[in-house]
Image 1 (cartoon, rainbow, N blue to C red):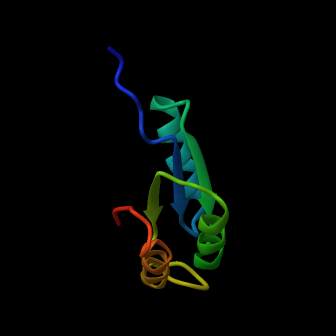
Image 2 (spheres, rainbow, N blue to C red):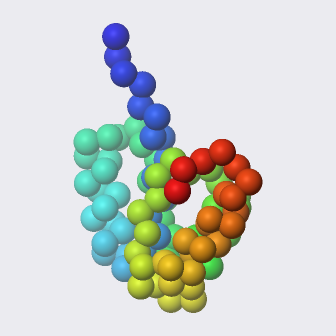
Image 3 (cartoon, rainbow, N blue to C red):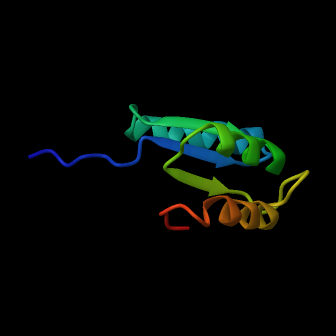
Length: 86
């Protein structure tokens, strides 16, 4: 029996466009059916998470606007009442 893939959408938060392109290319090579999205700063990340469902987040800690640590604090507040693991 084929195992289900529970991860369908990956989000990369990184201000380096070259890192994002390389990351997406590597993921798509082995997992072409996965959706890979990218945001370039902390504000975009929080806005994206309010509008979209993601299964996995790769977070650069050193980003403009809001750094990764500030984003983690906001994400924890957003998901505090939901049944999810962070």
